Image (cartoon, rainbow, N blue to C red; front, side, top):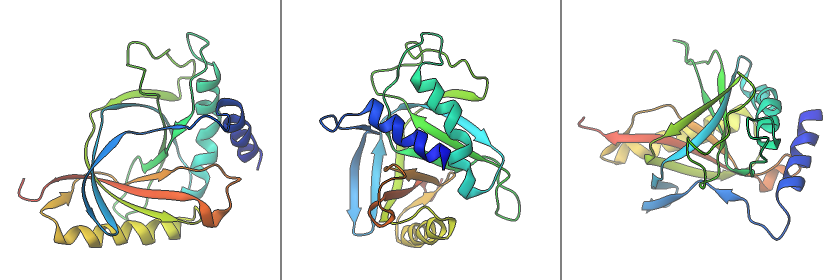
Length: 198
């Protein structure tokens, strides 16, 4: 609960109602009802990896990421909040479960690796992502693992009719803060794609 309240404070502090929160840029290549094929632009991520279950991961990773964008960095610079917040398995086991989860804030597009101030926390890793093709499915609703898995499977099933195949770890993208009513929350599953013949 305390982490959720801090998240609310973060959004109220960093984004006024007149300002739209910057979102991760992409171009829609193909739109087939439930599924979109998108080309994402290169982008920077600030990531914290935690060893806990799916539902607790976002809360556990929140504080160091919050501190980083609030000024706990080499330049003592406030970094704007963006959307979505990304979550993906960091170490899959043979059982299909995960040892840990990587939670990432997308850095504002104006920053490069060179211009982004270094985090003070050793828990935060900054990475340059190359962009590329991803399949996406969007859904509204709560943040349960069951809901996530239901929509991940919906996306994987839908991809069977494409010549492109899933070739990377699925990412869970959350666009809304905890105070958003659960039935209005926008969520997405994103899966990297490659040619099925590769």
